[in-house]
Image 1 (cartoon, rainbow, N blue to C red):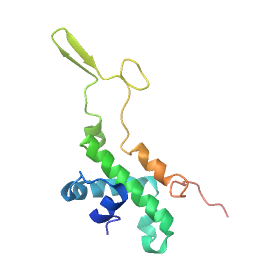
Image 2: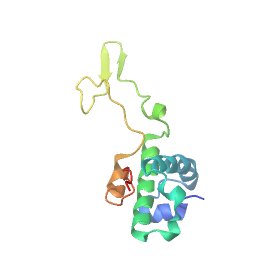
Image 3: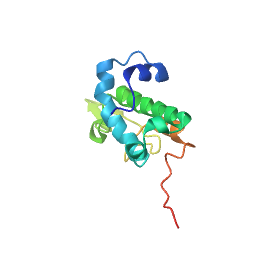
Image 4: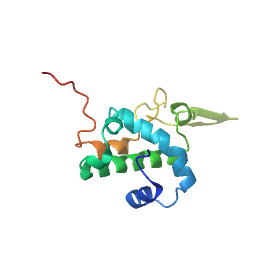
Length: 133
């Protein structure tokens, strides 16, 4: 069962430029990304029985991930980081500068959107500790 419907996506995100076909194409991978980040929390617990506040924030995080994939036009690590660092045509050279390294080398974009953590932080869904008895 999908975590989010297209109608919920439109309502929560306020985005109307992402079509239903694009949404359906990106939803499975975005769901897998959030499952990984949350240690499959909602794979083992029904959303209907969880706190509505936390469910809403999870769904907003899912919306952010779908939007991230849409902006980049990619859903895999390889596609996201496929842009060349430099391009030369004749005597003209263009470099994709890095946020961390002036020459643009050794940086890659993450598969998970940074905005996802805005929504999931503080919900307990990112907890990765081990219980001790």
